Image (cartoon, rainbow, N blue to C red; front, side, top):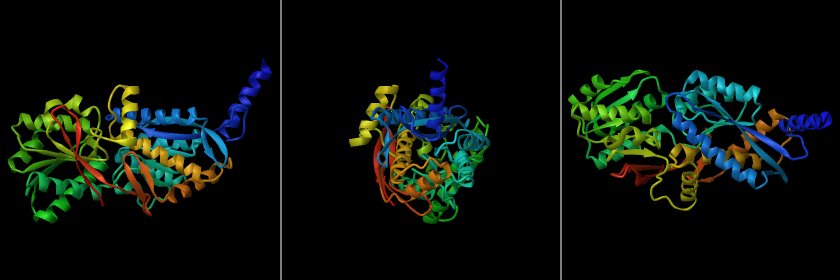
Length: 388
């Protein structure tokens, strides 16, 4: 019995060190995601998509790298939707769990500081959902699967000008959220460049724990914009839109990719129907590999996957493609992390379920955005595609 236990212990240690064992080898990848906090559905969808992909790979005998098969082991750390927790989660994954790469964080509020930790510790990181430029800027170890806000902001401005014939805009954003604040500022600069100084007639912000937005919304509505731009997380969008309607606002809203969560309509209901937002893919009407992913996810988990699930699928597959591009795994974690970083940077083009992408020198993908409309059925329906 003691010999049997000793063999198991040795093999477990061998797997951690990527050394051959009786049942094969393994590779450990970390996920820095919000399983609790303000946006737990984002973490849930990331984990569900990752688990589905891991089951596919391990079910086929593992990931082949240089003629060898490696089983995937995924480690999930909860960043609690907080910047400081994202830092500690990244350090745990890198130092304690000894992962070869980190997927996430998702929200820019966590991805910007989390990216600094990964870059400082020379560990490849890819954010599925973060759109703030600072996540990857001057960080050669950090990549992403999402388009950037300097692209998304003009997409929102152009669509509103065309769809609503808008000349005046109101904006409400979260001051402490890098994503929301950065996108709001980019949108304002672009809209005023196209419509003249002062065409953003009201530019309001709110604090981290605010639940009552009536003072800001009253200012915005009194300025009589043609539409209101909300670059906010889905949980806050539901509150803001309802409160705006209670104050008498009858005009359109234009949102951004953080609207695109399966919980939005549960929280917002009829108030969000008929409005638009820019995002990474449209589930309604999807075809090919994208539809296959959506159908499988829905059958397995009971609801339609939002963009963050699809982006996590793509981001994790980028890591797997990078691992295969390494040619071999040496078992020296520092060397293997460096080889993986270089292999991801060398990916010329990646065909994902959220679209084709090429990575630039900052580790950012050049890819298209889509604008969707929330239908009377609460579906996110494709309206148009906008490419760089």
